[in-house]
Length: 274
Image (cartoon, rainbow, N blue to C red; front, side, top):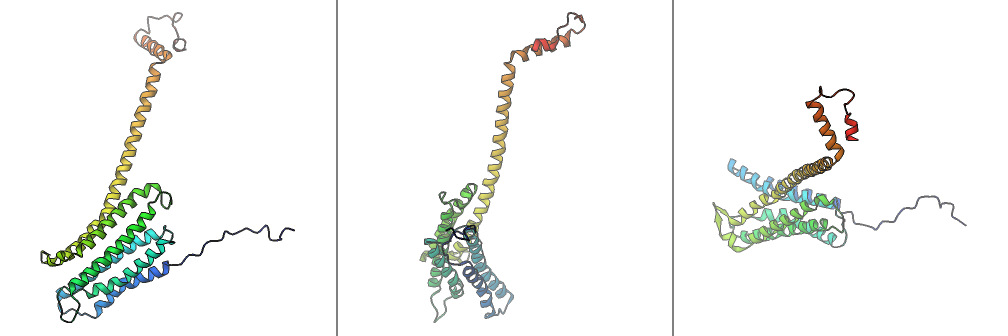
Protein backbone atom coordinates (compact mmCIF):
# COMPACT_ATOMS: atom_id res chain seq x y z
CA UNK A 1 0.00 0.00 0.00
CA UNK A 2 1.53 3.34 -0.96
CA UNK A 3 2.54 5.71 1.75
CA UNK A 4 0.32 8.71 2.37
CA UNK A 5 3.31 11.01 2.17
CA UNK A 6 4.49 9.71 -1.21
CA UNK A 7 3.62 13.01 -2.89
CA UNK A 8 5.93 14.96 -0.58
CA UNK A 9 9.13 16.21 -2.24
CA UNK A 10 12.19 14.10 -1.58
CA UNK A 11 15.32 15.85 -0.33
CA UNK A 12 18.76 14.70 -1.37
CA UNK A 13 20.91 13.85 1.64
CA UNK A 14 24.11 15.89 1.78
CA UNK A 15 27.38 14.68 3.23
CA UNK A 16 28.32 16.43 6.49
CA UNK A 17 30.99 19.10 6.08
CA UNK A 18 32.89 21.07 8.71
CA UNK A 19 31.81 24.70 8.93
CA UNK A 20 35.23 26.30 8.86
CA UNK A 21 34.37 29.72 7.46
CA UNK A 22 33.58 31.22 10.86
CA UNK A 23 36.81 29.86 12.33
CA UNK A 24 38.89 31.24 9.46
CA UNK A 25 37.30 34.69 9.75
CA UNK A 26 37.99 34.69 13.48
CA UNK A 27 41.65 33.69 13.07
CA UNK A 28 42.32 36.25 10.35
CA UNK A 29 40.55 38.95 12.35
CA UNK A 30 42.57 38.22 15.48
CA UNK A 31 45.82 38.04 13.55
CA UNK A 32 45.16 41.44 12.00
CA UNK A 33 44.21 43.04 15.32
CA UNK A 34 46.98 41.56 17.47
CA UNK A 35 49.54 43.72 15.69
CA UNK A 36 47.61 46.86 16.60
CA UNK A 37 47.29 45.69 20.22
CA UNK A 38 51.04 45.13 20.36
CA UNK A 39 51.57 48.78 19.46
CA UNK A 40 49.93 49.82 22.73
CA UNK A 41 52.76 48.29 24.76
CA UNK A 42 55.41 50.37 22.97
CA UNK A 43 54.80 54.10 23.21
CA UNK A 44 57.09 56.01 20.85
CA UNK A 45 59.20 58.80 22.28
CA UNK A 46 59.83 60.60 18.98
CA UNK A 47 57.99 61.21 15.73
CA UNK A 48 60.46 58.96 13.92
CA UNK A 49 59.66 56.13 16.32
CA UNK A 50 55.97 56.63 15.67
CA UNK A 51 56.43 56.38 11.90
CA UNK A 52 58.65 53.34 12.32
CA UNK A 53 56.04 51.56 14.46
CA UNK A 54 53.28 52.33 11.97
CA UNK A 55 55.41 51.15 9.04
CA UNK A 56 56.22 47.90 10.84
CA UNK A 57 52.56 47.30 11.63
CA UNK A 58 51.59 48.19 8.06
CA UNK A 59 53.90 45.53 6.65
CA UNK A 60 52.30 42.75 8.70
CA UNK A 61 48.81 44.11 8.00
CA UNK A 62 49.39 44.14 4.23
CA UNK A 63 50.81 40.62 4.25
CA UNK A 64 47.83 39.19 6.13
CA UNK A 65 45.36 41.36 4.22
CA UNK A 66 46.56 40.11 0.84
CA UNK A 67 46.53 36.52 2.07
CA UNK A 68 42.99 36.96 3.42
CA UNK A 69 41.71 38.39 0.11
CA UNK A 70 43.21 35.50 -1.85
CA UNK A 71 41.98 32.97 0.68
CA UNK A 72 38.36 34.17 0.73
CA UNK A 73 38.17 34.31 -3.07
CA UNK A 74 39.39 30.74 -3.36
CA UNK A 75 37.27 29.31 -0.54
CA UNK A 76 34.12 30.86 -1.95
CA UNK A 77 34.34 28.25 -4.73
CA UNK A 78 36.64 25.45 -3.56
CA UNK A 79 34.93 22.66 -1.56
CA UNK A 80 36.57 22.03 1.82
CA UNK A 81 37.04 18.28 1.81
CA UNK A 82 39.79 15.72 1.76
CA UNK A 83 43.31 17.09 1.52
CA UNK A 84 41.95 20.62 1.17
CA UNK A 85 40.62 20.45 4.74
CA UNK A 86 44.01 19.44 6.15
CA UNK A 87 45.81 22.12 4.16
CA UNK A 88 43.24 24.66 5.31
CA UNK A 89 43.82 23.88 8.98
CA UNK A 90 47.58 24.14 8.46
CA UNK A 91 47.12 27.51 6.75
CA UNK A 92 45.06 28.83 9.65
CA UNK A 93 47.73 27.69 12.11
CA UNK A 94 50.44 29.47 10.12
CA UNK A 95 48.34 32.63 9.97
CA UNK A 96 47.67 32.53 13.72
CA UNK A 97 51.39 32.40 14.61
CA UNK A 98 52.38 35.13 12.15
CA UNK A 99 51.77 38.03 14.61
CA UNK A 100 53.69 36.21 17.34
CA UNK A 101 56.73 35.65 15.14
CA UNK A 102 56.56 39.15 13.70
CA UNK A 103 56.49 40.80 17.14
CA UNK A 104 59.60 38.80 18.12
CA UNK A 105 61.60 40.33 15.29
CA UNK A 106 64.16 42.83 16.51
CA UNK A 107 66.91 43.66 14.07
CA UNK A 108 69.16 44.67 16.96
CA UNK A 109 70.50 41.82 19.06
CA UNK A 110 69.28 42.05 22.66
CA UNK A 111 70.98 39.99 25.41
CA UNK A 112 68.69 37.35 26.83
CA UNK A 113 66.47 37.19 23.73
CA UNK A 114 66.47 34.86 20.76
CA UNK A 115 68.80 35.73 17.90
CA UNK A 116 66.94 37.98 15.36
CA UNK A 117 68.44 36.01 12.49
CA UNK A 118 66.72 32.87 13.77
CA UNK A 119 63.40 34.65 14.28
CA UNK A 120 63.38 36.13 10.79
CA UNK A 121 64.29 32.73 9.35
CA UNK A 122 61.28 31.09 11.00
CA UNK A 123 59.06 34.00 9.95
CA UNK A 124 60.20 33.68 6.32
CA UNK A 125 59.46 29.94 6.33
CA UNK A 126 56.03 30.63 7.86
CA UNK A 127 55.06 33.02 5.06
CA UNK A 128 56.53 30.72 2.42
CA UNK A 129 54.33 27.87 3.66
CA UNK A 130 51.27 30.14 3.58
CA UNK A 131 51.84 31.03 -0.07
CA UNK A 132 52.58 27.42 -0.98
CA UNK A 133 49.21 26.40 0.42
CA UNK A 134 47.51 29.23 -1.47
CA UNK A 135 49.19 27.99 -4.65
CA UNK A 136 47.88 24.48 -3.92
CA UNK A 137 44.35 25.81 -3.44
CA UNK A 138 44.57 27.81 -6.66
CA UNK A 139 45.83 24.77 -8.53
CA UNK A 140 42.76 22.85 -7.38
CA UNK A 141 40.60 25.56 -8.92
CA UNK A 142 42.37 25.29 -12.27
CA UNK A 143 41.72 21.58 -12.68
CA UNK A 144 39.42 21.52 -15.68
CA UNK A 145 37.77 18.22 -14.76
CA UNK A 146 36.40 19.77 -11.56
CA UNK A 147 34.76 22.69 -13.40
CA UNK A 148 34.85 24.96 -10.38
CA UNK A 149 35.43 28.20 -12.31
CA UNK A 150 34.53 29.34 -15.86
CA UNK A 151 36.96 28.38 -18.60
CA UNK A 152 37.59 32.06 -19.30
CA UNK A 153 39.19 32.44 -15.83
CA UNK A 154 41.49 29.44 -16.00
CA UNK A 155 44.40 31.39 -17.44
CA UNK A 156 44.15 34.11 -14.79
CA UNK A 157 44.10 31.63 -11.93
CA UNK A 158 46.98 29.65 -13.37
CA UNK A 159 48.97 32.87 -13.51
CA UNK A 160 47.96 33.57 -9.92
CA UNK A 161 49.11 30.09 -8.90
CA UNK A 162 52.50 30.57 -10.55
CA UNK A 163 53.02 33.95 -8.92
CA UNK A 164 52.13 32.46 -5.52
CA UNK A 165 54.86 29.90 -6.07
CA UNK A 166 57.29 32.68 -6.94
CA UNK A 167 56.40 34.58 -3.74
CA UNK A 168 56.88 31.40 -1.71
CA UNK A 169 60.26 30.86 -3.36
CA UNK A 170 61.30 34.44 -2.53
CA UNK A 171 60.45 33.95 1.15
CA UNK A 172 62.26 30.61 1.23
CA UNK A 173 65.31 32.13 -0.42
CA UNK A 174 65.35 34.97 2.11
CA UNK A 175 65.73 32.39 4.88
CA UNK A 176 69.27 31.66 3.72
CA UNK A 177 71.91 33.04 6.14
CA UNK A 178 73.56 34.91 3.28
CA UNK A 179 70.64 37.34 3.01
CA UNK A 180 70.82 38.17 6.71
CA UNK A 181 74.50 39.12 6.57
CA UNK A 182 74.06 41.14 3.36
CA UNK A 183 72.75 44.72 3.56
CA UNK A 184 71.15 46.82 0.81
CA UNK A 185 70.93 50.59 1.44
CA UNK A 186 71.36 49.96 5.14
CA UNK A 187 68.66 47.27 5.32
CA UNK A 188 69.11 43.54 5.61
CA UNK A 189 68.66 41.88 2.25
CA UNK A 190 66.19 39.53 3.88
CA UNK A 191 63.86 42.44 4.58
CA UNK A 192 64.35 43.82 1.05
CA UNK A 193 63.27 40.47 -0.40
CA UNK A 194 60.17 40.52 1.78
CA UNK A 195 59.23 43.95 0.48
CA UNK A 196 59.73 42.82 -3.11
CA UNK A 197 56.93 40.27 -2.74
CA UNK A 198 54.34 43.06 -2.82
CA UNK A 199 55.40 43.88 -6.38
CA UNK A 200 55.26 40.22 -7.42
CA UNK A 201 51.77 39.85 -5.95
CA UNK A 202 50.51 42.83 -7.95
CA UNK A 203 51.71 41.29 -11.22
CA UNK A 204 48.63 39.07 -11.20
CA UNK A 205 46.29 42.03 -11.62
CA UNK A 206 48.52 43.71 -14.22
CA UNK A 207 48.93 40.61 -16.41
CA UNK A 208 45.28 39.63 -16.06
CA UNK A 209 44.15 43.11 -17.16
CA UNK A 210 46.47 43.16 -20.16
CA UNK A 211 45.48 39.66 -21.19
CA UNK A 212 41.78 40.53 -20.95
CA UNK A 213 42.31 43.72 -22.99
CA UNK A 214 44.31 41.80 -25.61
CA UNK A 215 41.62 39.14 -25.80
CA UNK A 216 38.90 41.73 -26.43
CA UNK A 217 40.97 43.51 -29.08
CA UNK A 218 41.80 40.20 -30.72
CA UNK A 219 38.12 39.28 -30.74
CA UNK A 220 37.20 42.58 -32.40
CA UNK A 221 39.96 42.21 -34.98
CA UNK A 222 38.90 38.66 -35.71
CA UNK A 223 35.28 39.70 -36.18
CA UNK A 224 36.36 42.47 -38.55
CA UNK A 225 38.46 40.03 -40.60
CA UNK A 226 35.58 37.57 -40.69
CA UNK A 227 33.24 40.33 -41.86
CA UNK A 228 35.64 41.29 -44.65
CA UNK A 229 35.94 37.69 -45.80
CA UNK A 230 32.18 37.26 -45.87
CA UNK A 231 31.80 40.51 -47.81
CA UNK A 232 34.41 39.44 -50.36
CA UNK A 233 32.74 36.09 -50.71
CA UNK A 234 29.36 37.72 -51.22
CA UNK A 235 30.77 40.18 -53.76
CA UNK A 236 32.55 37.40 -55.60
CA UNK A 237 29.36 35.45 -55.98
CA UNK A 238 27.54 38.54 -57.20
CA UNK A 239 30.21 39.34 -59.78
CA UNK A 240 29.95 35.84 -61.21
CA UNK A 241 26.17 36.12 -61.58
CA UNK A 242 25.29 36.63 -65.32
CA UNK A 243 22.09 38.49 -64.44
CA UNK A 244 24.07 41.00 -62.41
CA UNK A 245 26.49 41.57 -65.33
CA UNK A 246 23.64 42.14 -67.85
CA UNK A 247 21.87 44.50 -65.46
CA UNK A 248 25.03 46.56 -65.00
CA UNK A 249 25.48 46.75 -68.82
CA UNK A 250 21.89 47.88 -69.30
CA UNK A 251 22.27 50.63 -66.68
CA UNK A 252 25.39 51.85 -68.45
CA UNK A 253 23.56 51.99 -71.82
CA UNK A 254 20.69 53.93 -70.34
CA UNK A 255 23.08 56.36 -68.67
CA UNK A 256 25.11 57.09 -71.82
CA UNK A 257 22.48 57.11 -74.56
CA UNK A 258 18.99 57.60 -73.13
CA UNK A 259 17.80 59.82 -76.08
CA UNK A 260 18.92 57.47 -78.88
CA UNK A 261 16.53 54.74 -77.86
CA UNK A 262 12.91 55.14 -78.96
CA UNK A 263 10.22 54.13 -76.55
CA UNK A 264 9.17 51.21 -78.82
CA UNK A 265 12.68 49.83 -79.11
CA UNK A 266 13.69 50.38 -75.50
CA UNK A 267 14.53 47.20 -73.71
CA UNK A 268 13.57 47.18 -70.02
CA UNK A 269 16.31 46.44 -67.60
CA UNK A 270 14.22 43.70 -66.01
CA UNK A 271 14.33 41.67 -69.24
CA UNK A 272 18.07 41.95 -69.46
CA UNK A 273 18.57 40.92 -65.88
CA UNK A 274 15.93 38.26 -65.91
